[in-house]
Image 1 (cartoon, rainbow, N blue to C red):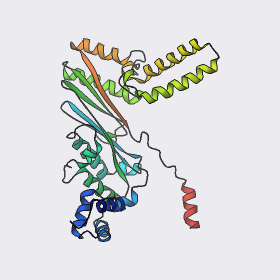
Image 2: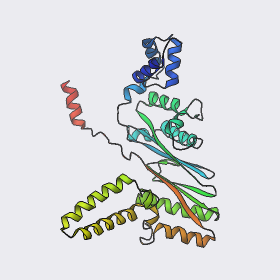
Image 3: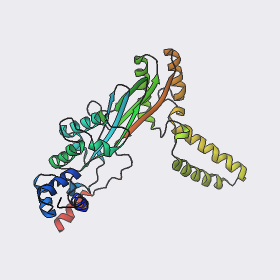
Image 4: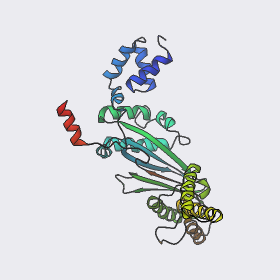
Length: 307
C-alpha cells in the first residue's frame, strides 16, 4: 500500500467522497493524492464536496413496516423542488426499506447497508448528489418493534405513498385482533402528528427540557412575590402541567378533546377483549432542529452584479 490512513482521511475531506471510493482511487493512482482527487472528480464522486456546506433542510421523511417492525427515516435536500424529484423519492423509499434490515437507529450503519439496486446506501446517496446537483443527507432513523401486535405507519399530507413531511409510527403490543389494533393505531398516529408529544411518558421527557421549564417557572413564581413555600408549589404545578401536556399517554386525545390517550388505549383493549399496550412511537417532522439559512435574493443579485 503506497498510502496511509491519513491520506484516505485527507482525500475524504477534500472531495467529500466515501471512504471506499477514496481507497480505490488511491489504489488506482499508486497513492498519488492529487491524481486521486482528479480521478474522483472525473467519476463525479467529488461533486458532493462542493455542496456539503449548503444547508439541507428540505427533503422527505419515509416510513416502512415489515411484520412487527417499523422504521422512519429522514433524508434532507436543499430545496423542496428536489423532494418532488422521482429519483430522490425512489432513493428515500429504498433507503427506508433498507433501514428495516439495520439494527437500532445507527445512521452510519444504514449508510453502509446494501442498497436494493446494488452498492450501499452511501453509494446511492453520492450518485444522487452528483446527478441531481444538490446536497443531500441521510439525517436520522428510528426503529420500533413489538413481539406481538402491530406497528402502524401514518404519513401526514403524503407526497407519495409512505413519503411526506411528517411521518409517524405507532407500536401497539397486544393479542387483540389486528384490524382493531390497526384502527386504534391510525387514530393515535393522527393525534401524534397533530399534538407533537415529546415523549411517551412524563418519566421519559428529556431532563434538560424539564430543567429549562423549571427555571422559567421559578422566575415566574419569584415575580409573584408570594412566600417561598407557595412559590415552590407553583413551580411543581407548572412542571406537572408541562409533563402532562407533552407526554403522549397523558395528552388529551385531539379527536374528542377530553380523554387522555392512556384511557383511549385502555378502552380499545376492553372492547377488543385483550389488553393493549402503547409501547412506543416515532414522530419525524422534516427539518426539525435544522437552522435554515435565510436567503435575501435581491441582495444576492445586487452582490453578483456588483462583483
